[in-house]
Length: 251
Ligand SMILES: NC(=O)c1ccc[n+]([C@@H]2O[C@H](COP(=O)([O-])OP(=O)(O)OC[C@H]3O[C@@H](n4cnc5c(N)ncnc54)[C@H](OP(=O)(O)O)[C@@H]3O)[C@@H](O)[C@H]2O)c1
Image (cartoon, rainbow, N blue to C red; front, side, top):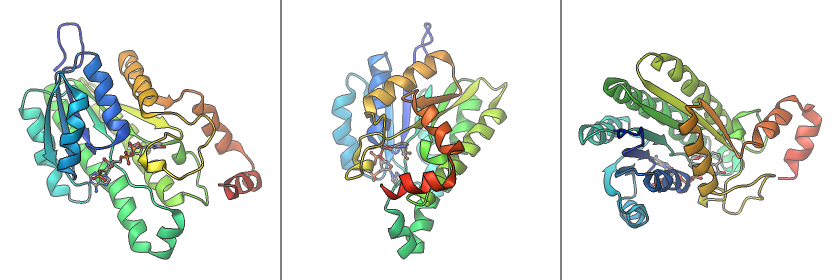
């Protein structure tokens, strides 16, 4: 719950080993958060991450985006334990587009994780936030959702769906006291992008976390990170298809 000064006291990270999710949790702990719930598949890695979240009390919960039955228990346990002001929907997978094309089942599994998992977990989290009457669901979308590209259209399609879903959910939550913040990072240097050629304005999980905290403070509904990638997304949307293809081929 938030304290008398409106500061975050509790944070739940769905995708509890995400580098960006953990950076957001650390930034909120730096601002006074006292409880962090990490929900994910890798118990050992979540325990290892707890050290960097001190002095907050860290709790872990099993959560698998591909197993909707795990969503409600993980989310409800965190809320039952005393209130969560910020839920970060941080899980996703990103594989090579050609891998998805060679093995359609792997593309479908990625879409299920990144979109269907987000819908299920997002709806559960929204219900819990609305029931307590305050708090923000932070949904990690992506600049990749701006326009389909040959190099990453399976990932981009799922992110576009998630972004659309999150904005609709924000409308549904109006009047409940709960909110949604859609975050659209550009290229962030994490294990997800290891080995990929960085895009212009490549950034770090810590910088994204700062942008998220700033957006939470402002009560914003959308945040680009860094803010300049809003114009990259605009350029991607309006650029002639032939130019987009040429740029995309260089990736
Ligand atoms: N890095 C970027 O450039 C970038 C840019 C824009 C948006 N984003 C988005 O930001 C978010 C965080 O990404 P990141 O860079 O922090 O990547 P990351 O460190 O690779 O984190 C991804 C997280 O997703 C979890 N995950 C994957 N499949 C899961 C499943 N079935 N169930 C539960 N958890 C699952 C991973 O858990 P395990 O440890 O169990 O694998 C990991 O915690 C993602 O939504 C990503 O799409 C990233």
